[in-house]
View 1: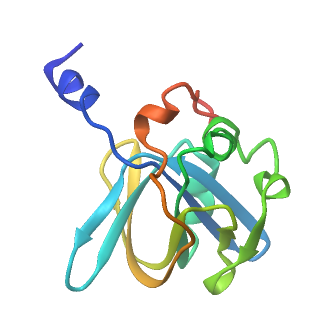
View 2: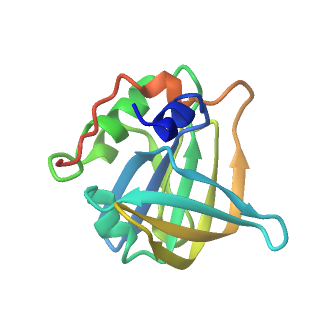
Length: 159
């Protein structure tokens, strides 16, 4: 294990489900690389793997939704992180509704926001999507699902 790997192994942070839609083409995936990157104006960046089905939809989308999951919803993390949208319609298995610009919003999220894509940054095997928040919703209390809670999930996208 490299020294950086040892450093990163100590981190624990929320994981998110990011959803996108372009017309009838919907996608969503579990992401661990994300965070607020500006206070004024408010900005948030999510990093999506280029190998992920969601990347192909998100790269064409004007708006993305970012969802925090409740800690007890490992099943949603497994669906969006352990299964590929190339193989199944993930949204057929969950409660959701269209949000701003048709982006899917998960009904069982702890909290979510929709953001307009302002920029994209390709810095390796992931692409960062800089989001300008449009609207946000908090549905409940309690801790969010975090990275350590999902370490047992094998990525559903092709290697």
